[in-house]
Length: 329
Image 1: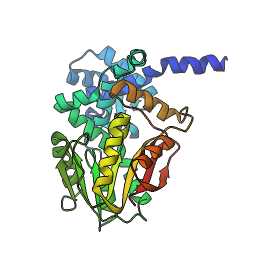
Image 2: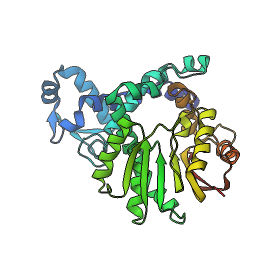
Image 3: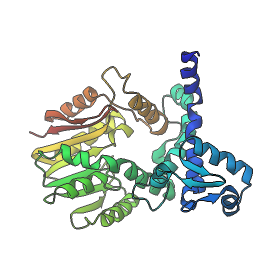
């Protein structure tokens, strides 16, 4: 067997593997399989022919997303956890966003030629309410798993009040306040997002300690005399000029001794690893005007240029996901 050829062909076929997952989510297959059912029963409910649906179901069995006993298909642990609406681990909103993003990825060569996004997602977030909702809740679904680790990394950082800039559904504010009863937080985001933030905060039982305020982080101030300010998975969507403006306004908002927190996926210093973040960097190119992934060194240089000191890396994962801190002296 030619192992090199097999590895190369796997890369070429790689985009095939996610498509059945997106189709299962779109057709609501896992949601319909609360009890084992035949393909014919599912086809009648969906309103499609049995034969093409059977192809999808059989592929899902091969991917271990479904199981089959005779003619009856059933959910596996994976599909029950991640592909059903009522599961606390549901990733359906996130998958709808990933499915939507597959089209810009097919135009990656054009993004490279042009040096800019082929389908700027900021535009759609402002114009498509359903996409906005899926995006905010999808990022919440995906990021919630890292919330406890975020709170743990801050256990020795003195914080009474956190300002969470571009905080979306309030994922990290919720995680921090859940872990530390003495902390309050305020999420700043656009008006349609803030309504979703309030929903997730109420669902978490933290409406008395996590508030939400309408603000456009590209131009508005972030408050004043706050203890800590967080940019989580925000700066990679913006140009260097916008990042610098945001860091300057962060410094203005913090009290002396206050802590700046920057969280996201960072490249190795040679920019060629980790693999996921190199892909994340290409995603930023194709999907966000001016977007890019930074190295830790890049970001720390920008943070220093904005006047912050006492920088540290509070958390670093093999995927490139890092939490950086700095202090306003």
